[in-house]
Picture 1 (cartoon, rainbow, N blue to C red):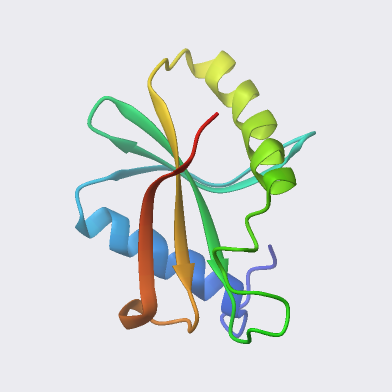
Picture 2: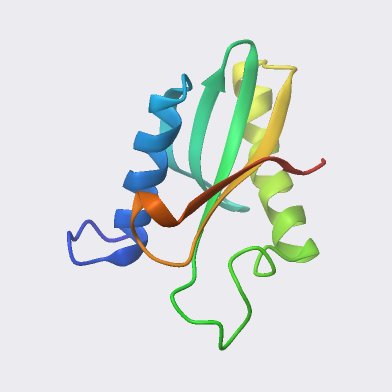
Amino acid sequence: MQINQNNPGLLAENLAASYLLEHGLKLLVKNYHCRFGEIDLIMQDKNTLVFVEVRLRTTQNFGNAATSITSQKQEKLIRTAEPYLQEHGQAACRFDAILMNRADAAHLIWLRNAFDA
């Protein structure tokens, strides 16, 4: 993602990271890339590694933020998480989602365990 303060996606990711930090998680990696795709945030919640997908939908024309995390997107996130898990040897993990219909913290929904691997 391009580093640009006018980028709503980047703003949403920064808001999500700040929100999760305020709720006790520790930020490990932003925008993790591998050949399978990208994970927006990788965080630590006590002994659990948390892969976070941040979804911002300012219009409902193509579905809301939650419905945009399709089964294909879930599979891609799982495949993307596997190399990170292999490299870092973390056993306990989960996939969370941060959903927003506007790029501000008042419109943020945190779904813990949004889907299973």
